Length: 207
Length: 87
Image 1 (cartoon, rainbow over the protein chains, first blue to last red):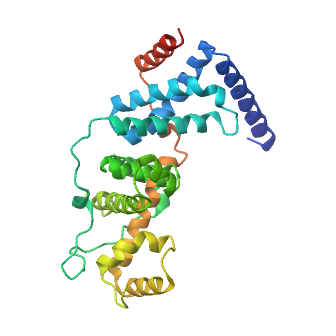
Image 2 (cartoon, rainbow over the protein chains, first blue to last red):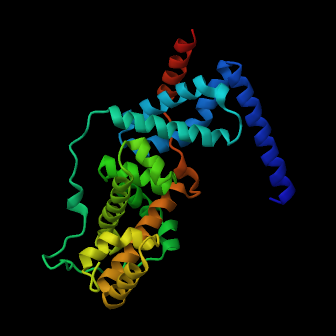
Image 3 (tube, each protein chain N blue to C red):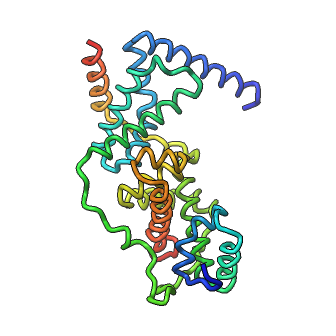
C-alpha cells in the first residue's frame, strides 16, 4: 500500500471513529452495539491477561463497556477510542481483582532462584539457546510465554502487566494497587525472575 | 555494598543494575562480579530475555492473537445490561 492510500485509510478510520463517538454521545443504542461488537475481541484479551478466569474477564468487560458508555461525554478525542477503552478495561480488571475471592497463592518463593548459605547459586544456569526474533516468531513460544505469565501469583502478575506491558509508571502502579513504590519495584523484579524460572525448562529444551 | 559481591546480592540488585539506578561504586562491583561469574552473566541475559519476551508477546502486532472470539451470549448480556440501565 502506498503512502497516499495509507493516509486515506487513516483519514477514513478517523472519520468513522468521530462519527461513532458522536452517536455514542447522543445515546444511540445502535452505536453502542457497534462499539461492543467492534472492540470486545481485543478488550477481552486484556481482561483475560489480568484475571485469568474467563468468567471474571467477561464480567470486567461488561463493567468496562457500561462505564465507557456512562462516561463517553468526557471523551474529548485526545487519544484514540481504542486506547481510551483499553484503559477502562484495565481499570475494570483491577477493580475485579480487588473484589474477587482470593485464590490460594502459589508461593512466589517456589519459583525464585535458590542460593546456598554462602550466597552462591544452588543450580547451574545454562544460557537460553534462542534469539529474541526467533522466539517471538514461534507461535508455541509465544503461547508458552503467555501461559507462564498467567501462572504468576495475582499480585505479581498484576505488577508485571501494569509496568512492563501497560507501561504505567511505578508511582501510578503503586497508587492503583495501594502499595508502596518499593513494593512495586520488588514485586516487578520477582515477577520477572519467576517468569524466567517458569520459561527455563522450555527455553532450555527440556520440554 | 562491600568490594566483593555474592551471587545472591547480585540477583537482588539486578533490576536496579539494568535500569542504571545503582551508584558508581555499586555498578563497578556488579560489573566486576559479572565478568568473573558466567552463571550470573547467563542469569542476567536470560532474565532480560524473559522480560523482553513478556513485553513482545503481549504488546506486539500479532494479528489474530490480539483478539479472541467473544461469545454472542456475552455480547447480548452487555447490550441488555446497557438497555436496562438507560431505561
